[in-house]
Amino acid sequence: MPRKSAVERDFEPLMPEGERPPPPDNLSEAQAEVWRRTVDSMKVGWIGGEAHELLRRYVVLMVEADRLENELSATPVTAPDYTRLRQSYLEVAKAALAYARSLRLTPRGNSPRDGRDPRRGSNGFKPWEDDCPAPRPVRPSLVRSKTHPRPWDD
Image (cartoon, rainbow, N blue to C red):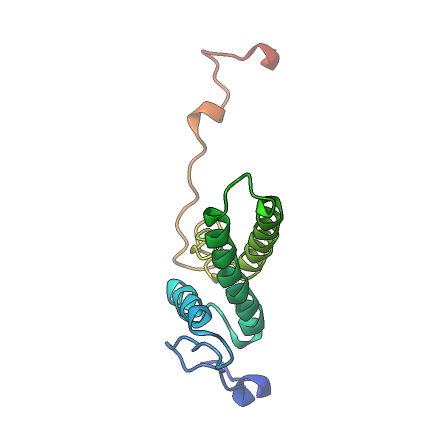
């Protein structure tokens, strides 16, 4: 087993392994519910302590977007405030989406091919490992054929 560096020995994780961060105390009940749903939908350990402030801002924006959406649906299109409400909703929704992308909350960001996955690569194996499988053969359609030459192969 390799030796641990001083940093690894002194480092204590912010959350015990297998636990999800609870919502901060200063969030409303609706915001805390969005926090829990968001954290529960991600892998354990996906959102580290360094991202809690971004997650808090995302949660606040999601609750505000929900409020504006309800208000917008109750407002007739001909009302004088409709355009202002719609613009506010679009701005809040755009900001919430930006935070979601930064936190990689989308399904694609939480997939196994994400950059945080140590096995990321073409097949997860390193060529110098003994158990590395043989390379895949080249597709026949990409190999030159003498029976069916291409016009530009002359």
